[in-house]
Image 1 (cartoon, rainbow, N blue to C red):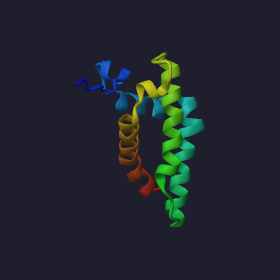
Image 2: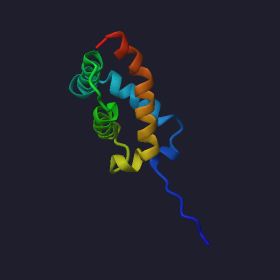
Image 3: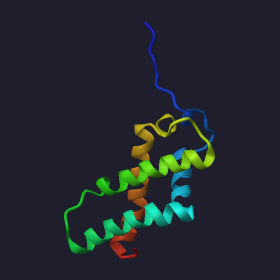
Length: 109
């Protein structure tokens, strides 16, 4: 019996692709202005107004756009799904939530 494992480009990289993608999303001026900042302000507005919002519904579409932009910028893989598997995308969400929630609570956006 042969066990088939799912591989991606992320397995071959000698750096943490999740951390690198977050740096890209936060530091690329066009991506930040068009996608990252609006997502964070939407989360902060809901938090400030006391609205029930699932932050994943706001952040995960931004992450999908970020994965595509990252792959296009660095010419990695044919499709973002080849580079960012579900566990990498969840890692992106977890890390962004961890980084941004204190800023959202402090009213920085």
